[in-house]
Image (cartoon, rainbow, N blue to C red; front, side):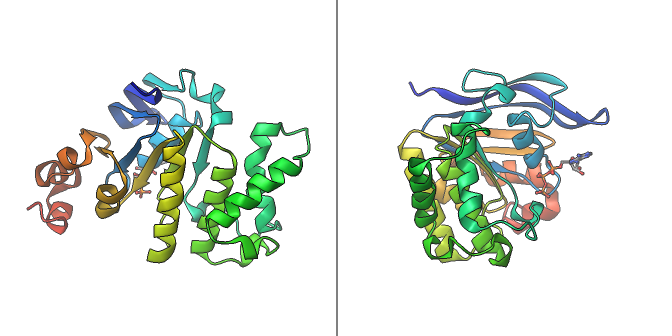
Length: 245
Ligand SMILES: Nc1ncnc2c1ncn2[C@@H]1O[C@H](COP(=O)(O)OP(=O)(O)OP(=O)(O)O)[C@@H](O)[C@H]1O
């Protein structure tokens, strides 16, 4: 039986005393990809931030690789939504990717030749080796997203958390990124992807967690992304869009 990389048990998260997620349960096993599906404001980013230990849980427990989230960060890579980063920051593409090595080598040590090789390989895997010297902010939104995935790959994580990683990424790049994520998964990494894209979930994920403030389903994609459950999670207006009405 594979290890449980992320375990979420009866978790409630509140901002300013107001619950935005209630009674959430689920898990991501090593070598497995889970899609986090729900409408805008459902709490997907909040759940990812709670798994990183950036947002405290009001009740329940989140365990990452057998530890509290804040103690497991070295083994967890996070790809945020691209538009949350300041593209004006004066840093090269290669430097952004190399940042993925700092948790491994420690912030006070300089990355060595092996770290630079791992970072260069990661950039190559997302098809941007030729942009290594470019300033991060001069890349397109989709290219920046690929660089952030390269940074996560360079970290060699055991748990990869991706928050809507394909926004602004064209279909060809998305295929390349999915291949890369598939490679990590084969090496035993656990992957959690928040997305609005149901076809992506069917294509690339083993399980789905359907939520809108509370859980509407968790399990194999085909059993969770059904018309009835989507209608319950998204409401009638959205459900009709997905053929659930
Ligand atoms: N720092 C915060 N303080 C207060 N409320 C917040 C904070 N961050 C998020 N929220 C609220 O929590 C709810 C869930 O937000 P969250 O960003 O987790 O949803 P999401 O499912 O990721 O949405 P989207 O698909 O639009 O990115 C929303 O109502 C949001 O306004």
